[in-house]
Image (cartoon, rainbow, N blue to C red; front, side, top):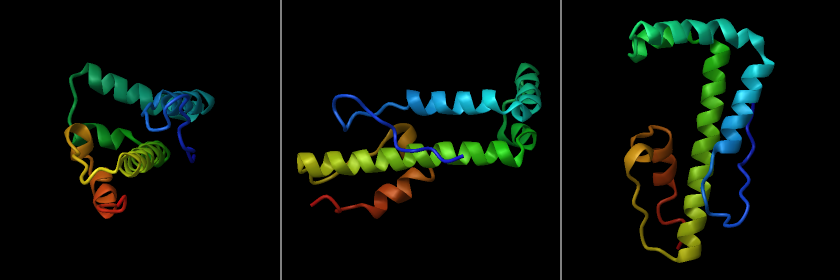
Length: 118
């Protein structure tokens, strides 16, 4: 599954991923083959299993591909909108912090754009 760019009404620089999350929800509902995996992870969470190494084996290739495509869409959108804002506002630098700064896919893409907006 490939996700397109998120669409925003109003300010094109605003971020919202509710449409993207809804697309994932509909995709999962339309593909019942995800149900056993989801149930298995829900049961593991109810048992208190929270660690990556406990939950990853409960994710099949199709689910991991869906998660990867979701992350790719989010990162692409964050980077594109951030660079558009930097250019439009003629800023000298962009500060990245919080969860975005911890994202191993987002940070390299943002670093690759350093200075692109001047």
